[in-house]
Length: 224
Length: 283
Image (cartoon, rainbow over all chains, first blue to last red; front, side):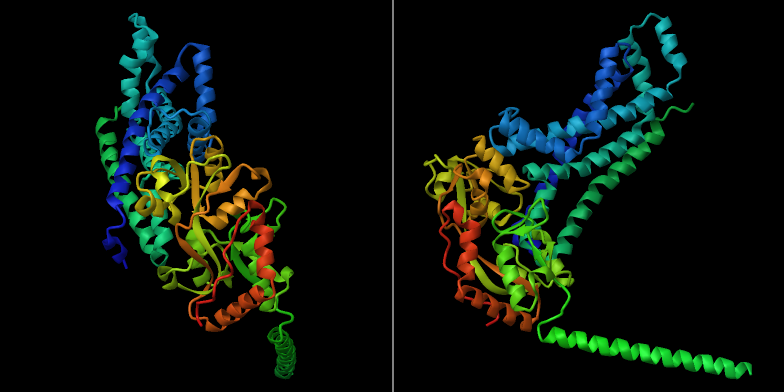
């Protein structure tokens, strides 16, 4: 049933490695971007608050496929912004990471904002009374506690991100979903076997993430 | 008294049901008689592509146009179905085998290349068309004349398609290949000079080049990089249907409808099609 794998024609592990790379780069990027957005949304400056709210509501409600194709068709092919990529392979990867960061950042932001709400107001008031600036209150007092509260929600965002990387196939990034399309084109007689391989691959990627971060969430949570 | 009443009621019920079934039976017989003589069958479901101009396209007002659609309509007519008895169903590439195997469609006419792996799951009738992998370039571009020229060029095709794989493994491994979700996205890149050529079967390319909005912008290079014999996919082992469809295709070529359909759908792109191929499947 799985004999087509022996032909050496398909690099399944290589494709999943690209998926992992996409996930890691996007995860780091969206964690940073999401934190910045969360900072904006709770900041005392109305303009920043407005931008944060508008960005999150706009991007979060735009389909990811649209964002990624927009990156490819709009940024790269029409405007010629290739993010320093020489070939379509490089450009596609970078554009996909950009699109995934722009999208996933909004979910990180909202998770983090819910975490900020778990920190008692007294903490921020006490810090302000000590003479700390807004930036200091946020980075030294509030965010460290907020992050510990939202490990589990962030794990969900990471798992969703892992699966969302398959959208990158639409702009030609050679990750798992693209290989799956190739195999479906060639191995139509074994459609369900192909499907099973990729379904299993994603379970193997996301299940350990969930278990590990679930354990971490229990360990670091602030008991109030 | 009670018993006799019940018995009477039961007798009436039995009598009624008997006449009812008799009626139903005779009606059914009439219907199947009509069917056998090519008359009052209800519907036939045919799988086509919805997104390939010139071959199989569903227009915004719900009509179907293209060469595959014309072939499907002709074959259905030979099988005894009027055009208004044909129900078209979308058959995207990855789902064609399953649609046929599950009996969701009677047959599939959807740029379906005959090959051995597919024959493990379905049978084919035909071929009814011989296409070649080719290149579409901007109308003023003369720098690409053979497959090797592609090694220094930017090329576009559809994710996972056979044409894209051919480029990667055989034709031009050095070429910078962009794989997009559909050919329309590739056309955007081609028009904006982000890519230099678009590759897939010449029939599909001709369909795009022949669209009103693209007229005069693009041209086919005219290479024969592969042979794709399009067949009509049908349920494995259905020899009777295969023979009937083959006969219909033969008739379509002989009475000139085939050439007319090619000219109508693919002609505007100055596409020189091959003559109708010999029928090789199942005979």
